[in-house]
Length: 67
Image (cartoon, rainbow, N blue to C red):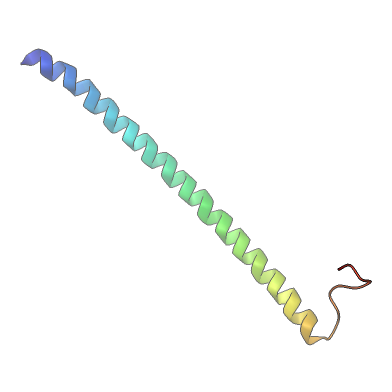
């Protein structure tokens, strides 16, 4: 009975530790992902503003047959 408890206890502790490590890693990854999305969306907004301004000034964005 005592031996079983001694065997099972460290496994549960390491399992919990592994789980917390995974959760910490996931949280960090999620934060980095959110930062990336913020940067990405702000750059898209800036690009959209440039295109919007250009189209309203009637200035061709692509000049000299770059297509």
